[in-house]
Length: 486
Image (tube, rainbow, N blue to C red; front, side, top):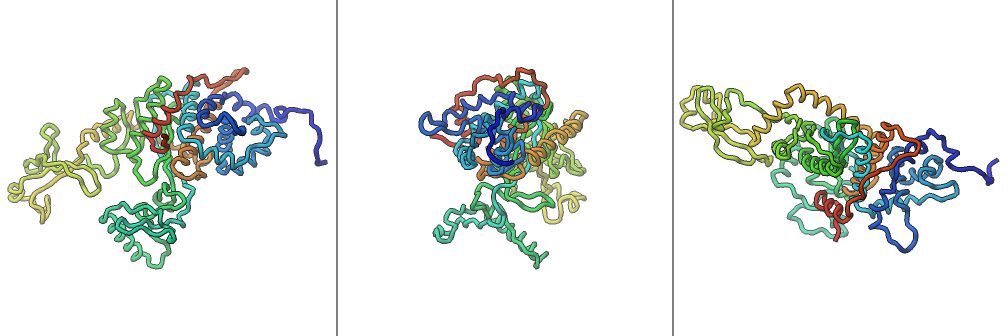
């Protein structure tokens, strides 16, 4: 019969010995959390939520693929294994979901990054990280905002709107006039092609989300537009351990984040006496600046060139020694100048003499009817592109392409489908970063616990003490811009 009965037993006896929360997770020593949280906890007043319990609860949420704090606490209330893992008995009340949410909001992102670094150190200690080959990729993670509630931005020349209009805090449009006219022409073409189709054209240049202004409109081919953040990850090629993860804005190309990811990953590996030598990524990370900077850092990159890059111009031969082109008639096109195209990309111009083109029998089909002379353009980083393409054409380069698809893509898929990253419960770039760090921690812990056999006495994270927290916060502020302190 239901009712209250005196039970002479232990909670640990009710949990199966081979259960995940009983057999493996208790062997991890989470005491490293307390020194990281200490600067943000007061020594007086009412007792606060234990930092170890806080981190364990959030990890359970990602291990159980739960994105709601309410659902997480409901499960923990009923789950004996989770209670035992947290150190709570049957009669002890669990924290309120609001306590969990407020604690997460008040702590800076640097705390979560420091915890993630400690878990990466655990994986390195267990021999799961080789360090030399890092594979990079990214994915859109749905933000906690609705596309139906987007609002237009204020024009740069408009007067301040009153608070009664609801857009007093709306950001200004920063796009150029030419770019806005291009959007208008695109919108007109859509209406002309489908006049009866409902919907509206929205862009990050003209619209924003009032509930989460840092969320950006993102889309992929054959998929609807969503408000999202970009989860950029770096994965070690040995056992697919995540060595870096970061929340980025979803309206920039991946290539703009490559160097920041490489530097952050390298610094984290150097902390544990390891280094990286090879960087593998897809064509989204391609740019001449990235190719050059990887070489400056002494790293070997395997990043395919984007589809718009042309290594050759038909009918023209390039001579690197003289930095000039030669046409089929034997005339030279020497280097003229470097200019910036309408898309903001630097280009090198090579131009023939108008007098030579005028008497050329192939002039009309070569330069056209209106141009006076033939002009060719290519990127200032042509030599870097050629070295990268030659490297990718080798047998090792082809193997690196296969390695990328077999390494980082399954990791992103597991994070999204099984570790609570199908959508974000927090708002803002800082909130998204906290969720991503915790999801990566849960993923690395589960992989580490599955790939190692433990001794009966258990083991812990035998790592050096965390660096002074003030230095960590200052570094995070300078590199990410997500948290500031006086």
